[in-house]
Image (cartoon, rainbow, N blue to C red; front, side, top):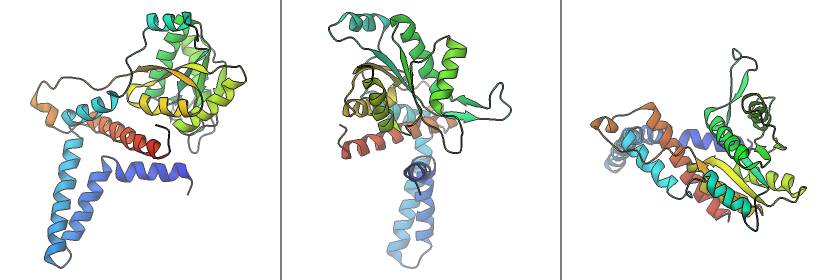
Length: 267
């Protein structure tokens, strides 16, 4: 099995919502075994798994988790701050927009493949910064599994059709954040660009910065799409919701990814 397949399997079986349920199922199985010690441990795991599944699907817990992950991201990059960077002694030479996924549906028009909502957010913010600065854009993202079109090609098409901008560089080879960084560095080196403006969501920015610095680039963080920090205003925040489950998945995915990057020496 390829690394990308193992990564996907890990995300499905260990991260929420499936991870706590897998733990609960194992606890139930263990509780049915003979022996008081095993049964007691099984009941404990069953309770922990079910409690974790409930808590991680509530807005209150999801907001706390994603807010904690985003607390490691720099402050947003305003157009005024970008203008100061451009007037500095080492101005950036490009805006790098990272792909965040794609979607496919044969009923879509005019093409069945489109950037997913996370990628569209990144493109919109990257386009705003490009118009404010005049900097050229690099879009980064390889082919999703079983698809013929790379994320970078979809991003380039969307930038052209919806924002009236054409990227100068396309990274169509990378499959993860570390790959985004390595391939972007290779493409930009041909034009002598080392300092860049890096665009991705706030929760993803700490890991992205580490990867791009390890690749030899000097990124200026342009985080956006902050999802945490909302106030809990009613008891409904402690009831499960689909949106909260998604936020918990993003937060735990980034937390685990940060640990893995630290092991690999990116941080």
